[in-house]
Structures are given as C-alpha cells and as structure tokens.
Amino acid sequence: MRFYPLEKLINLHNAYARQFKIDSHQMLLLQRGGELFLIEGRCPHREQVLDGGCVEGDALVCPLHGYRFSIRSGQLLHASEEPCRSLRVYPVQYEGTEVGVLLED
Image (cartoon, rainbow, N blue to C red; front, side, top):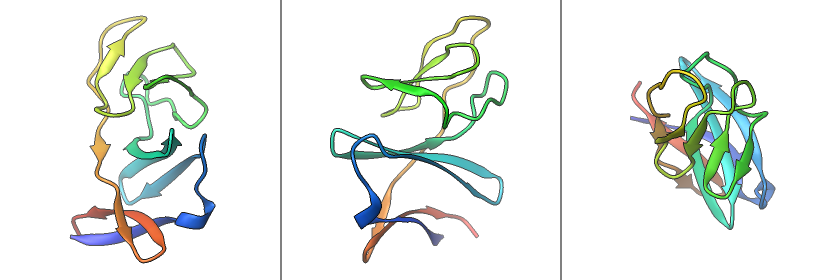
C-alpha cells in the first residue's frame, strides 16, 4: 500500500469539495460538519463527474439525473431511473500535515 497525499490540512474547510484522479481511481474529497469523506468521484449510473453535485444532509446528489448517495457509506439512496451500484468509499488517511488515501501499488 502507498500513501497518496490529496490536500494539506490547512486548506480544508466546511463545504470543501475537490475531485482527484490517481491511476484509475476517480475520487471526491468532501468536508461537511467537520468530517472528511472520500468517495468515488463518478456516478456509476452514467459516469457523471460528481464534483458538481450538491450535498444535502448526508446525501450527495448527482447533477445529471438526481441519483442520491450516502457520503458516509456510498450507498445508493435514490435512483431516478434504473438502479445502479453504490459508490466506493475510501478510508481517509493522515500523514503529517496532509490528508490522503492508501492505495495498492
């Protein structure tokens, strides 16, 4: 496993959202209510990038078709068309003054 830094802790704030791509992993880092969440950054329904989606409570809403996913578990909460799989959730890792993710080499 290798640590991939994503952001410096000093840059994080409530309502923070930023898309990252590492190899084949498209990820979205969010901060809400003082908590960090790192989830898959594309909707599995039609591969829409999710950084333009809004967060309502604990749900991320896909900007294309309104699919709703839990930012905590990645679970699909609502599908406006055919159901799709849940979003992958990545564990947030801290190293020094940075937040990142551990991925296999």
